[in-house]
Amino acid sequence: MRVVIHWILFVGLLLALPSVMADGVDSDQDGFDDQDDHCPNQNGNSTSDRFGCLDIDGDGWSNPDSNWTIHNGADAFPSRADAWLDLDMDGFPNHLGLDDSDDCPFTHGYSKVILFGCSDLDNDFVPDAYDDDADGDGIRNEMERAASTGLNLFDPFSANSTPSDVDFDTIPDVLDDDNDNDGWPDELEIERNSDHLNREETPLNRYFGIQTGIIYHGGFTFDSQYDEGEIELSLSWFISVLTGELVIPIALIPIYVFIFVLRQRKFSTIMTVIELENDLERLFDIEQDVNELVRARTLKVYHGLVLRNAIEERENIIANRNSRTKSRHSDFESE
Image (tube, rainbow, N blue to C red; front, side, top):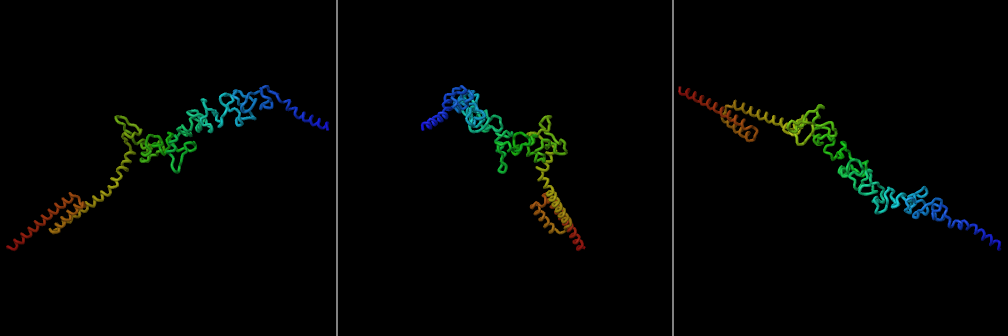
């Protein structure tokens, strides 16, 4: 029985011997016993995330390695003693009071103007919250919003959502008064049938492919540069006036001609009737009709005057003729 007990004690001693031997052993001579040292074969001075591992900046947080990364708790800034934590992995420390403290600690970003470490879609170092053109597409945020419609929304935070800008003047076409940037307002070019999206075509060279007009700036200054306050002398302007401002008067010309011909024909017809009429009572009725036509503006006033004079002359002729006829009858009866 004693022999068995002795063997049990002997085996237990053998099993405990390595632990006893390791206790107090510091293989890398860094002040941490091997049993507590996370890097027992590398001299190190880290004390925060691991014990006894390499800590170049001496801030207590170990340098990252293949077995222990920043995600495990290693120093995110191994060469800076004032920083070790970077939750969003953007290179800006999550510590207050530093010159480059991360203003957006949970958002990955590289902004360096106004705010550090915040979202910067176009990589111009200006945070999106303060950037007039957050997505860097050349069109300001408010312009993209203004150009949006219910059917076509533009996202100022996406470079893949950009309104059309054919002349690259940073003003969306739907808001641009001069889309082709040729100096002529789109509204005027459309009115003159000139291509408002083609810089090479203006109202001055719209016809025949050549310059057909000038802009007069006063004195002896003439050129082709449009100026709203100056005088335009061009074929385009003339056609515009002819077909625009004068279109109604021109359209009324056939009506005027028709009315003129109708009045002239009525005048001629009445004049013929007067010249052939031999009845004084009938001439009186015709005169009354003429007066009514003048009042109704079916006959012009001067036509009415001419007809009245003709009626009066015709009445005189008939009266004289009747007088001579009566005189002859009297002479015949006296004989």
